[in-house]
Amino acid sequence: MRTALLSTLERSSDGSPRAFLQLGGRSVLEWQVDIALDNGCERIICLAERSWPQLEPIRQKLERKGLEFHDITGPMQLVGLVSADQEILAIGDGVIVERSVANEALRRGRMVAAVPSEDAISAGFERIDSQNAWGGLILARAQIVERLAEMPADSDTISLLIRLALQAGTPLVQLGDEAIANGELLLAQDIGSLQDREHALLDRSTRSVSWLGPGRALAQKLARYLAPQALDRGPFWAASVSAALLAGALALAWYGTTAAAFLTLGLSGFSASLSRALRELRARLLGLNSGDSFTPVFRWLYDVSLILVVVWPVAFDTALEWFFPPMVLIASLRLAELISRAKFAPMWHDRALLSVILMAATIFDGLPETIAILALFALFACLFWREPIKITQV
Image (cartoon, rainbow, N blue to C red):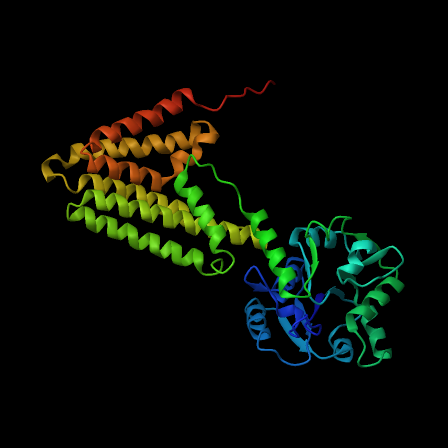
């Protein structure tokens, strides 16, 4: 069994616990819990001078997963919770390690993380020898915890574990000479340092999107502007707005206001792109899989809605004739997404852009011609702008 030891004892410059400072809309402690769960910890123990209300959501989350959570005040309680045949993963109070960096280091097995002391000491990290400072992570045999019973009750538990792990022969593992300089390792000492780190994380997590798909590119820019506050509930609300606008577009088409219906479809497509951008930004920020199940469903709903917006204003006896052009358009766009050059993919994917073009065509009384031109353009791309076909020699 593997147990994680976290801490909320150290204070930031404003007097609040470092562990509760916010990064990316989440507390430092929540970031550390993620690392513990990534590395197979079945129990989380948190050093705390009292039962902070911020600990309760974490406790509930872990208990829903069938895991244990304990908050303790000192080393003697830890001795009673951990047995010698287990492993203990300790993460420094207020330490933020890039999730991928932490997981890579911990995959090597038992270790004490280290960084060159020159920059680390000035950043607030604890020196462990003449050349190294502690890198915020320990993975060691839990038998070292038994020796805490010999120490004073008010001792710094994690500092003692560093010394005990090194005395037990736990190897040092370097996190990298540039871990602090490039932001992969940070000690949260005040809100200002976290805000700088937060902006760097978000900028690094934001992918550049081709302006050949302006709707999706604008959605990406807006998602970065709304982050980090909108990363938690933002994807859900943007998706809900998108679904409501889709229904509104169908209602407008039913009453014959086709241009307004296309405008509403465009706004729906933009909201869907915003939902996806926020979801992907949050996933990259937290090192998770975005689980993009909404976008494929939305695109099918959108494409069916576009066909209905074109057909509904038409008299029933000619409706079947009007089904064919928008269906060919949608089929051509989807085919172009698959086989035309990859650099043009954002253009074929951008349903907000398509809606705006069709709205303009409706206003200027050229909708049938525009649908035909767009379909032919997509088919032209399939025929003449295809990715090169590579033949593998046997």
